[in-house]
Length: 88
Image (cartoon, rainbow, N blue to C red; front, side):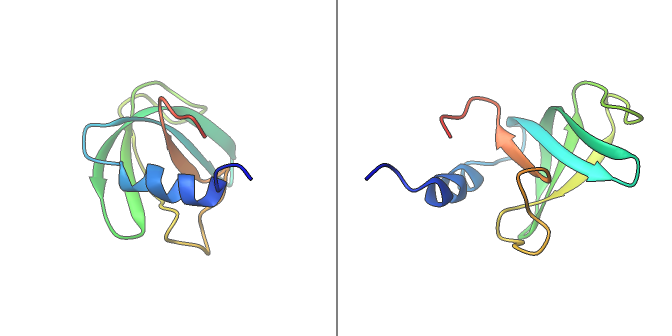
């Protein structure tokens, strides 16, 4: 039996910290996006990132709030952050 992917995602979430480079995935009424970003701040259920590159109408430097895995109602693989270098 291989490693538990959900446990790996929780562990990855625990490694988030201000200044860490991530890939941000999110969507809004205009579409779905992903871009490299840097973690600005962390709250219990939300991570705020600053985009390093533009994505759709969102310019580089924009702040985006994205749910953490602990927010089970809003988190999904299309609405999350992943560490830039991840084995999962």
